[in-house]
Amino acid sequence: MGLTISEKILAQHAGVAEVSAGDVVVCSVDYAMVTDTRASNTIKLIDKIGVQDLHFAKKTALVMDHYSPPPNLEAAEIHTQMRSFAGKMGTTLYDIGDGICHQVLPEGGHLTAGDLVVGTDTHSVSYGAFNAFGTGIEGTDISAVMSTGKLWFRVPETIKVNLNGALQPGVWAKDLTLHMLGRFGAEGLNYKAIEYVGDAVTQMNIDDRMTLCNHAAELGAKAAILEADQKTLDWLKAHGAAIPKPVFADRDAKYADVIEIDTKNLAPQVARKHRVDDIVPAHEVSNQKIQFALIGTCTNGRLDDIRQAAAILRGKKLAPGVRMIVTPASRKIYIDALREGLIEILTMAGASFEAAGCGTCVGITNHLVPGNGDTVISTANRNFKGRLSNPDSEIWLGSAATVAASALTGFITDPRTIAGGDWRATSWN
Image 1 (cartoon, helix red, strand yellow):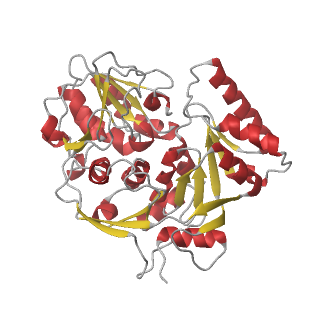
Image 2 (tube, helix red, strand yellow):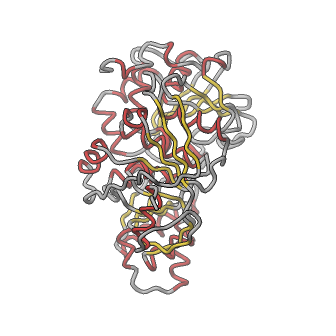
């Protein structure tokens, strides 16, 4: 019987020849990640279990990204606890400002093609961009992983999504993922593994592939995974990853469904207030005024996202009354953007930069609190009511290009109508 990529990875890590959707298997994990939102309970449970020798601690990263910087004493004490634990156990520690977990793990060379990676955040599906099976779990599960190096999994059904045709200049993976949400609905692919294939995937660089996999969390997917190609292998090598073990689906693999999407005619998309699956083309809501713009998060805080914004805003100013915050996904991305001159371009346009982290996205640090009646256009992955600490404001979602174009005009704007909005068509520099 032919196997999908996800089935092959789970079978290999369970030490069996094959698995089928619905099987329950115990798998060896290659790497684990704990964010500061789950770290305290994880450490407490490990202490309660009483394991004396945590061999897997050295294959685990503790990441301070949600409470970054800590908004209160409780959060600061959690960070103190994490630093102490990492020092004792030899766990890799990413401190305040180092970056978002889903960026620093691959950047740090902690995973490679064919790996099984778990993390205490739903967007751990991002690791599928590197042909790894990445998935989110709870802190109690991480305690088991750190104690034994193993965890149980129910093998998910796999949906194959053929993305037919290259994306137009100015249209990005974010637009594709929003289209998916509009088509299938939030959690519409609950506990499914998604295999993305086709021309659009081949065309994408690694930054966009990470966005494609990341947003599968909103679809409810257990994993989202891509085939490894030369771009994948080159990126992994450049970041010091272990020797890749690329995994490909068998020709006769059994899929729960095969979906065809014509991507060559896709327009920039936005998600309307309060729902990640209320999706419309950006040009259809061009009368929607905005007051705040956010570029960043684990979904769209990478270098190409910042480049998109800089290409649109170079030599220009934000619309009167519009504020913009940019949060790079990692310290490295910030430095790279600085070296390219992107930080200066965006700052001169009127944007402000936050340290790398998740706090602005989820409203924990209260660094972006919209006023009553304000509308935010954001590259974040979620726009739930009250997510930015004010239920009397609205959050809309779009690509970095759409967010930058909207910040320039003061209204939600198709970036292709703005100079620089299709910067892939020519050299952007």
